[in-house]
Length: 463
Ligand code: UTP
Image (cartoon, rainbow, N blue to C red; front, side, top):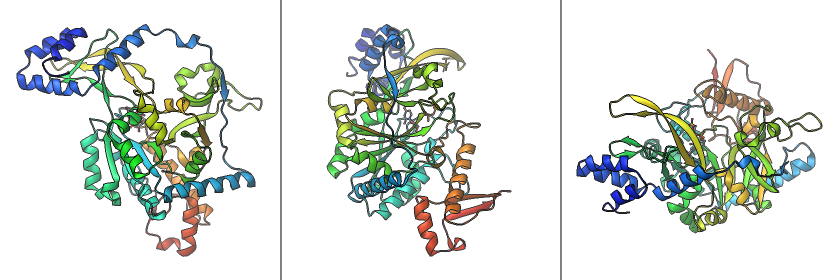
């Protein structure tokens, strides 16, 4: 599309209200609106709108759902042996510079209500380190431990891209060589009404939304970073989301299981806390491993119990994956392969007089876990929620900064206690990733130093 064709395109799509607005704008504003819209895929959004408007009732399709095969948390000597072997396979991948870490941080973080990029939210219990700092320090520690060049990739959105880069720059990339930290922005799609109308956000911009965390796999390709990573010899991409401070970046055990299964897409899961927990569930659907959103899973399956009275479909999604890069490339080879989902929302839309009015909209986005059933081989591993999963979603209540801080204190207290150090109950503890990435490393280091000499184990009394 060029600026001359722009009015015709708006007309073709029946967007006369935008055209009227455009024709009333001064030339510089017209150019601004055109430039902004040129970066949005109008053809895609109108196609998605047509398909959605015609969609039938998917729930009537016949599907066979079963629990998937999942690598359990080891509880026997054989299980421990398999874990140890996986760890060393994963460590070899890191040492051979075949692993990159990706953090997707393009979301709008509406529920948390933090007006800056979510990764800049201070979350650690004693030192108040931000989410980004905790992740970057893990990458720095892994690079040092395995003499690896592990790149750190951060996916932003158009809205938070500049602020995210400025934040890393102002913190000197948290000690990682800045040439190994890559930022790329996910795509945006116009938000549309159920009647197929585009909306104006302001004079020179259409209302648009980020295209979902699955957009990371598309933007990797469109940004050129995918090719760059492949050229560097990277074969596996560790993927996680910006909101989970407990995540073990590039966990060697996970990488090892992924590699020994020759998996194209691997996933970590935790036991669902209750039949009511609103979490995506990892299942086998018509013989293919898949994650179903709780809203698509249906009450009967969500509540199903096994013969022991335990939750039958127990595997809750943590949004932690490893993806093979040749697979990510394949997902992009003939157009982007992930399906788009439509979220119906009611938003407050500002009107020309400054007041807002509620309006129903459709937002289209892709979900990264829809890559799982497209993979030829998958691997899924159970982990302990208390050790690896405590997302920060809400301002208060469940999945909030308070629950995440509590989980971090409990975890680090447990690491210290397993290393033979008892921690008074009225204290908060925090162990820097730069000191120990896991309890094994902590125990090893404690053989050399007494606690009072540790610079990166922070202990603070709760006042
Ligand atoms: P959520 O779906 O929890 O969204 O994203 P959010 O933006 O963090 O929070 P709310 O729903 O607005 O309150 C889960 C993860 O996926 C990333 C987010 O940054 C977060 O890490 N994400 C989500 C993206 O990177 N892009 C998107 O378009 C959506």
